[in-house]
Amino acid sequence: MKMRNQSYFKVLILCFLVASTHAQLQLGFYAKSCPKAEKIILNFVHEHIHNAPSLAAALIRMHFHDCFVRGCDGSILLNSTTNQAEKNAPPNLTVRGFDFIDRIKSLVEAECPGVVSCADIIALSARDSIVVTGGPFWKVPTGRRDGVVSKLQEATQNIPAPFFNFTSLQTSFANQGLDLKDLVLLSGAHTIGISLCTSFSNRLYNFTGKGDQDPSLDSEYAKNLKTLKCKNINDNTTIVEMDPGSRNTFDLSYYNQVVKRRGLFQSDSALLTNSVTKSLVTQLLHGSIEIFYDEFAKSMEKMGQIKVKIGSEGEIRKHCALVNS
Ligand code: HEM
Ligand SMILES: *[C@@H]1O[C@H](CO)[C@@H](O)[C@H](O)[C@H]1NC(C)=O
Ligand SMILES: *[C@@H]1O[C@H](CO)[C@@H](O)[C@H](O)[C@H]1NC(C)=O
Ligand SMILES: *[C@@H]1O[C@H](CO)[C@@H](O)[C@H](O)[C@H]1NC(C)=O
Ligand SMILES: *[C@@H]1O[C@H](CO)[C@@H](O)[C@H](O)[C@H]1NC(C)=O
Ligand SMILES: CC(=O)N[C@H]1CO[C@H](CO)[C@@H](O)[C@@H]1O
Image (cartoon, rainbow, N blue to C red; front, side, top):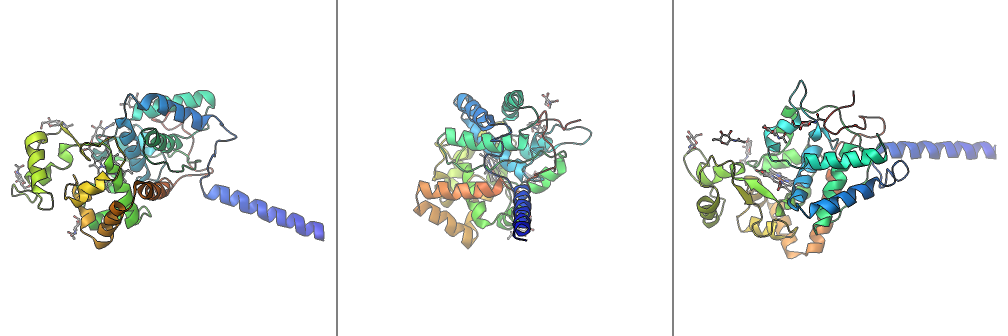
């Protein structure tokens, strides 16, 4: 009887373990199946990011765009087939780094074919590239599986646009299980990287269709942008640093820009239009870089878990741009 009870108990525990490993990602998921995988990714990022530090911005943005559409499942990497893929949607016009991911994938495939997902490669290389360029570290539990569907319309519907107001941003983030704190912290990624004029030139030239300027944008700043950068509303080639003078430094100065009414997008300015997000911005500025990094890490860990596919869902793609045949 005692024996029976014990083995019954063991079965229960086993079931629980199996259920829980299938219910979520885990740190070092590839420790047995491909022990060198994470090292290969980190090494590659280490060797190549110095030639192109701006790629860190591109990769964290790719991770964000991937997670907001069908979860973090690498669907952003798929090429269009009979239908138009996410890749071809307007919001990703400037998503870069696809080759970089493909090169990492081929190194990892050479080490252990068919084991490491493209979705995990995005998540790990985004984190590693930010760390290697001196930014915050966050944990990346692995075990994501790759999706087999990618639709342009879903990217357009789910990726927040630069002209979003507070309400639309809140809804967009809530749809992904993210709250206002996540919104403020993740927007902090705009401390690095660049934007095309066309992502915000309506604020400079034709805010309400009467040839006017967005009153919530600092007028001095708007004037400088117009004379030095975005010389007309159709300029779709000039790039602007979102956090001028520190576009490669992961610091608090993005929030400084925001409180000075110099956030580049309406979505950045919108953080001041709600008392909760406004006070979070102020708190971050009164805190320290360490606090920002810790809080940013928590939100990134949350974002990296959005609707992940695990266990036997999805597949491990052979080529990141193609579903397996
Ligand atoms: C809150 C809603 C957000 C909106 C409306 C938004 C919008 C944009 C837009 C319009 C651009 C410029 C695209 C271009 O013209 O080249 C951009 C760039 C960027 N975004 Fe966001 N974004 C948001 C949230 C995020 C989040 C959550 C992250 C990452 C955690 C992120 C990371 C970046 C980075 C790093 C860049 C620069 C990319 C580069 O240099 O290539 N953004 N974002
Ligand atoms: C995916 O599309 C890109 C751009 O059109 C192309 O360069 C690449 O070769 C394609 N990848 C595959 C695996 O077909
Ligand atoms: C925010 O934008 C949405 C969608 O354009 C609009 O319906 C709503 O009225 C706006 N909210 C505010 C407070 O301006
Ligand atoms: C400003 O917007 C209005 C309404 O959409 C449009 O009719 C007008 O041509 C625009 N002006 C410019 C300079 O783009
Ligand atoms: C940029 O604008 C020009 C002229 O307005 C247009 O011909 C071109 O297709 C645009 N490019 C992109 C990438 O939208
Ligand atoms: C990298 C990539 O495929 N970018 C595409 C994003 O979407 C536009 C259309 O909106 C395409 O022209 C780009 O090629």
